[in-house]
Length: 280
Image 1 (cartoon, one colour):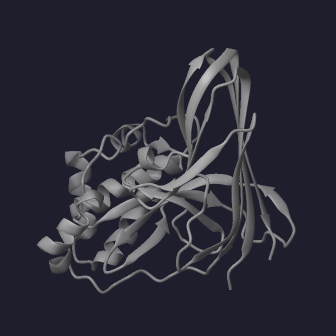
Image 2: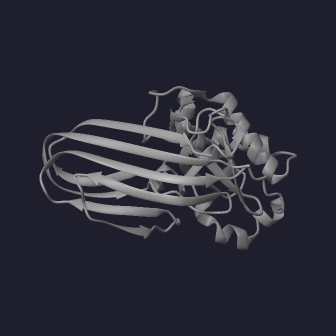
């Protein structure tokens, strides 16, 4: 049985001198699908702004706003309540022959391509080939997730938001973003469409109802093997009732929670907090 979870994600900026204008995009609205129901979601800013929403190419809800009054601080708060479902079993209807067929490769070509974050590497291509050997597609995806979990050490501060999968692999360290990019590289090398999913993870499985904890911005993968299904390579676990899904894309560049441009003083501080409460 799934859970009802409230997520409050607050991002604060301060600037060394007044900012005269800024233009921003926020991806802090959860998605509704067969494993997640959005009850309420809103994005608020301080100073207050007028905003509008649209759906981007990947199906993610984007809140856009701009500020034209001088300000030295900006706070963006996304508040959502969602109902999550238990884990879905991996899709197993697609064969390797179907995945290699022109209709599938044409339909999912963007989730098979390599990007600046998910770059090709000969050594990792050999690893993908070995992981694929003798397995059905869904099992090959799980093997890739497990391999990344075993070979990459979770170590905050060793990589940044611009680190590619190959760069993380060279250091053998990273955070969830790097675990996902490296897994995407392996899975796409196998010829399986795969995409980056951003969201949150309620850290403790034993979280009590009404308990608020410090949550985590998180990321995982989804693969298409006859249908889309997800797995969390950072923890090597199924996507279940503790995961809240926000955005999807080819890599991190498509799902960044907050990005924009501004004119004025340099950003002097950035403070991000995520509070998660299990409501039911």
